[in-house]
Image (cartoon, rainbow, N blue to C red):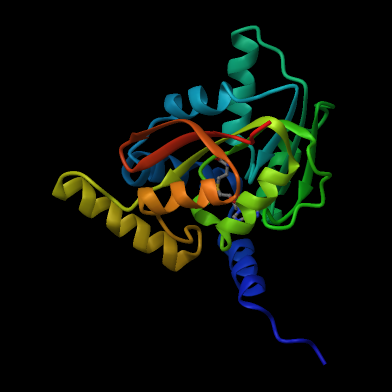
Length: 226
Ligand SMILES: C[S@@+](CC[C@H](N)C(=O)[O-])C[C@H]1O[C@@H](n2cnc3c(N)ncnc32)[C@H](O)[C@@H]1O
């Protein structure tokens, strides 16, 4: 007899289905979500995540690798090298896009994994980035605990987290509609209240080193204490 699925299994299956679109469509859709739901810009993301890549780096929920590819291009352009990278994602279709994109780049190893249960050794990575994905995780606390575990003491985690829409009525209204659509489709698990997400980051053991808010997005760099 097949054992009944847990809520966690059901949510992960929903992620696989929700992110089962061709990478090109994911990129077009992502541009609109970035502009009208996050109310953030690509440049803000390149700056946040591009400045948090150490010699041994973990790229969490890498998706099809579009953003990480732009960051690598930016690193090359500014003549900064990168070391070794492990990237993971739970959705096969997204991961397949990343595998195609980074084929032949021996610095990058890609694997399918749930952020809440990483088959990676503890205290391994200097840095970890989770771009545009914290609010997609069905169990964000398990994700934070795992990211904490695999970082070296002193290692840093950069993330941007979607907040409940704020600001003036027309823009807030548009963001609310996009969030509702995203939750129904399964590409968004939930937006967060600022205090709630900060509390969850700290509960996993991190110290918040730097943060700010742009539009509806909480940008944060947190450190695993030495
Ligand atoms: C909005 S996309 C962001 C992708 C990429 N970081 C970017 O910025 O383009 C969110 C990604 O999170 C992944 N994801 C959601 N829940 C996950 C989980 N529990 N474990 C690993 N990846 C997950 C999805 O498959 C999807 O590729």
